[in-house]
Length: 335
Ligand code: PHE
Image (cartoon, rainbow, N blue to C red; front, side, top):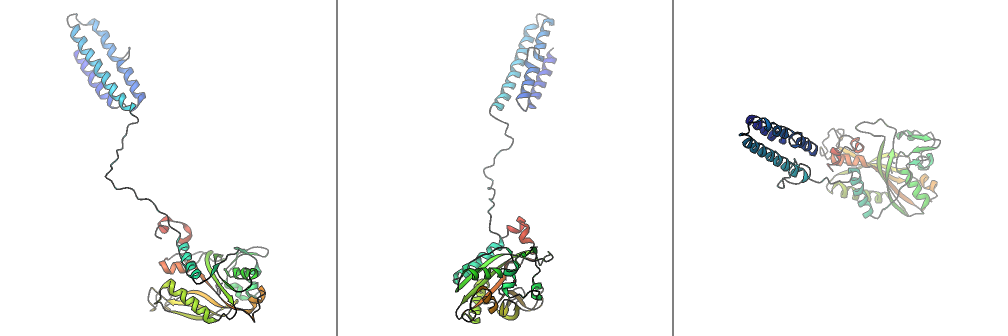
């Protein structure tokens, strides 16, 4: 009998350890303490114990019962205090960093370009991305069926609807709606039907600029754009203007800066030339003025356009244009 009681005690002590919730606690109570439980069963056996030994066994059994009861009470108090907290808080650990967002590298680049031109007195204008042939080409002095149209592979959307291939149609819309003088920059998305790869994408961003007034000359164009280049890239950078062709400007030029990777010696980025092209510009063609009803005998002007991706790629040393549009945080969080 004594041995049975001892065994039950150690089992009860072990079992209470594995009780994890109120349901298991109730099962435990039923097993040991209920009227038909294992302790009650031992009390029943007292009858068969010799009468002179009964008081001693009765005392041990009572002790067992109160021991089990207190194990149960202890466990119950733990559940009453709420769920078992397995994790503890270490207040000496450093806090977890907050994730702070930042603007997209293209927005940062655009904001800086805007800031420089607004500082020189330019205002902002915009226009639709879905254009008609007239605004994207015709009014910009691209004759019908002229090969110059092939310089910009176009997404045609329907009868006389296309995705603008450059921001120059916004020049036309601004001049159609405002008499001269005009001095504005026009940022926005443009689309070209080109194979998508590390160097080109079917959509990108440009900033267009237009200045029209009486007596605007090529010197004004140079002064303004050189000032922009010095503010944006630093005053010690070398630049050059090289003649080129655009239907909507005459004369036209591309502006190049010294390759800042090789310093002009020639490398992969500048295709061994030592120079990087950063924008196109020129004096507004008289035919463009005629198409918006400006008198080319009274007014002259200059225009320019640059690709924002290209400028950001050169500035941050990004080697794949697709990174701008994939929204991979590992890329974005570097800016
Ligand atoms: N629209 C031209 C292009 O996309 C850039 C440009 C704008 C050139 C204005 C001259 C004047 O290539």
